[in-house]
Image 1 (spheres, rainbow, N blue to C red):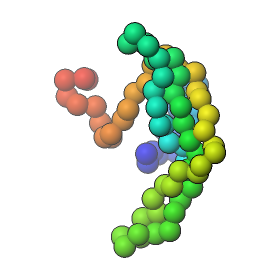
Image 2 (image 1 turned 45 degrees about the horizontal axis):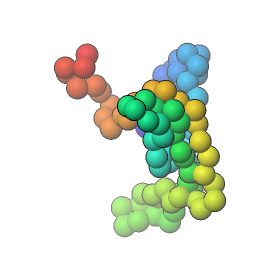
Image 3 (image 1 turned 135 degrees about the horizontal axis):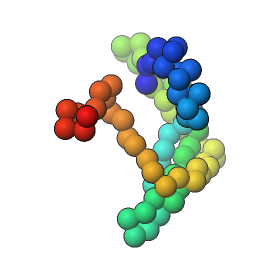
Length: 83
């Protein structure tokens, strides 16, 4: 997700870790509780008709991250009722 440099620095200073070219593939846990996230490394493929290079999963690069909370962000601003 695009961000200004000051936003990246602020996130790093707050303990945020960035995993570049990494795709979550499964949330693991039970009873409504998250325990970990299974991930796979990706690489940028050939440009498509629009010039965008889409990520391609790299087989054999699976790993898990221990986690008890996850946020999927699909927009640049939270919905009004979440503010």
